[in-house]
Length: 190
Image (tube, rainbow, N blue to C red):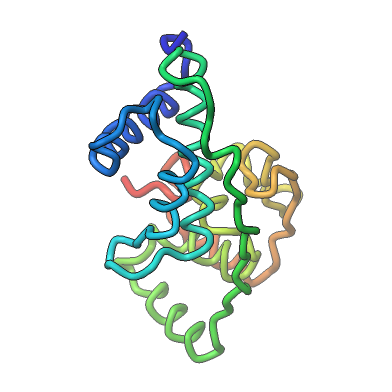
């Protein structure tokens, strides 16, 4: 069955296998109880050694649960101990905005010839409010509708899985007119 998994999923399972063998070296997968996993979860630390955030803990449980589900499907264990651990609610941080002073500095830098490759990417976020990850997935010829003066963020590339059209304001248009559009995607650096 694992041959039918996507590459990303196979890599994730491999990564979790290695992590679990390090962190639970005294246990077999089939022996990991709710108590053992919960104790480990409660003591989670981030890379810098600080206690893990609630979102980090939630992601840990989510990935670990997926790994145990794979183990169950492949007869490596009978139960998923993560199913009995209450997951914390996701905390969504408030959006952060640049100050006017920061915007002026950014625009000054973007005017320099060395930063022509970044003009489209940065100004779409700055003047159209498109998320950085979404901008990086946009293709110049497919997603930028020059005739209709809009940027089309299709469902498969949108964070919220809802497609939308974002108007190209006159300010953004003037920046896109001097941006490097020779790459395939907006976020691509040749």
